[in-house]
Image 1 (cartoon, rainbow, N blue to C red):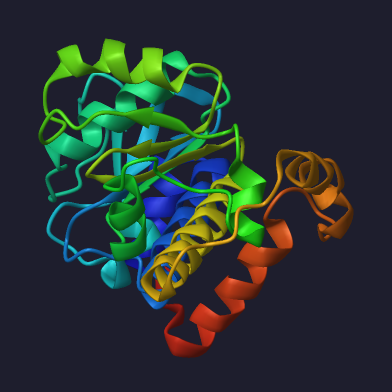
Image 2 (cartoon, rainbow, N blue to C red):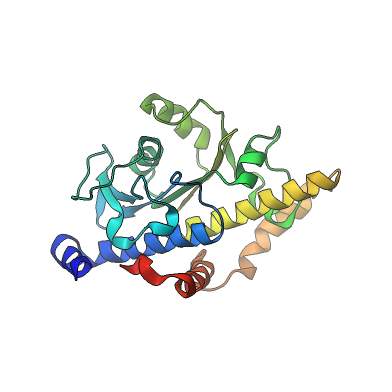
Length: 253
């Protein structure tokens, strides 16, 4: 009942739907092992409110996130609801920067997965040595580690290094992906994570085979032909949410 009151009296239907989708995404990340204690972040802009976005409550594990306990803040860090949970400064500084300056960055995910951090810490970063890595050749930005991201002045360099790309490996740090929709950000992270996992496994066995540039060009040209309908990542994301629902559907609350 409390959730219904919160939904009806304090937010639009569009915001509630965005909250549910984002809460589901947190549960999917937890299910797939992409969580990191109470740290890391996935954010989405609030529909019809360009200066507001939703972020996880600092102190909760991804598996505890619900639609109703997500925190609504503006791009200056002001809390826009009476949520009792704080917001992690490291998450706000980085995500607010991109939400502020990039109109197409509707959804942003940042993680410290073992594979993502390992490849981000490797000289040369992601290598063109497997199917998923071939998706990303020429499309990944890199940013050198400057310590925990809590200083606004780092933002200028983050934007400069990102350029026109929407996927970044933060060196010695982890994965950062952006999407025009949350499912698109999800599938970008899924694909990059798989690329990093396979690279780790391959390099542990010996010298990897490198995919020739001309083959990568054909692969990137044709990869959309193997995509499911509904928009980038939609079918993939929906399938993962169905799996989450079998475990715990409380994200909907």
